[in-house]
Image (cartoon, rainbow, N blue to C red; front, side, top):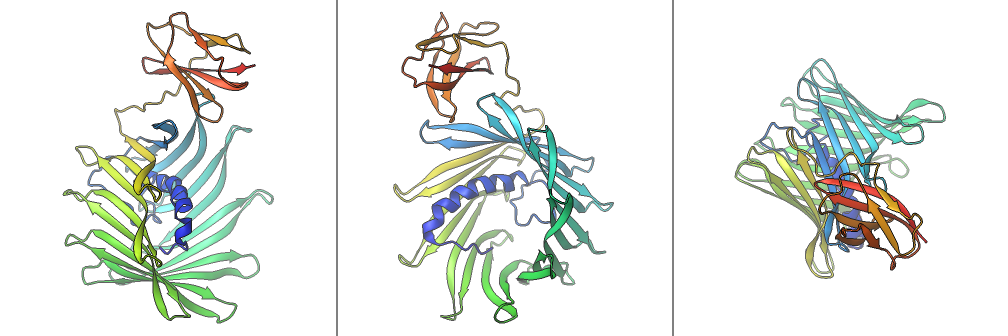
Length: 408
């Protein structure tokens, strides 16, 4: 894929990819028809959930911020993926999105629905759909994306992709269309795939439809793919065509590293800097697996040019049947913090007062300001805190209790 980006935008791109990559990796086991080139593992295990965290440089620790929960049908196909975000104010998970996949009698994806959670109505609202069409050979020939028009309360076409296959079932041509209410489907991009003697896609050409000036397909970019002796994709290079100079301009390089079990261990993205004539690091993802070969962890890094090192941005931890997440779903409502409002001290009490507990004070922006062992008298000094709303959190025996309070 050609990404129109210059070196000055690498940092912003990497930060955006931190979130997008997490969503893609969470779709690892979806088997959706539009999911290509995702890292596959040798294991048939499917995760029950994925916990996402971001790295706080200020606090030098990982902070939980998202969770995906998966359910499967009797054929081990993913039918539901529900996403939630961790709310530190209430110490609970809040729904964000839900993805549902439906299959036809042959086990092919037939419909994909994306919904968003609305707290005001405590309900899911369907927002996007993807519909799939297959030929008699099981090849996905058409993918149509639609969005729900709230004003007219109906589904509206958005984009469409048509695929053409050769006699070997290889995808050789894809044409992307955009929906125009006046002219129906309008072509926008076209991709041609070429394969080597081993059946590997070694080069792809990207074209854009120019209707204004030339009314024809114009070459836009290309990607080249390289494989090892076992057919694993170890490197790809992307280029943009410069018509004025009649030459290809290097854009990006993507490299993959595998272990002896063909599990993807790391993938790295670089951009070409014409000024220094070298590849510049952008982002890197590293993967870990359990003894059965199932994916257990993903860490996404960004390259820091200021001190020439990889900086962790986010990570995802995969959980399987029999394992539990490290973030509790239930917060005990009986915790008290008084007086409330308070000025110099607060007294914290909660059920089954333990012999030891850790007390933390957080602001509403998600920054931890106090962390200490809870005193025997349960009194915490807040004299140095500025006036405002805070969250007092107590951690004991794997349980987290929380309570909001006001500092005068």
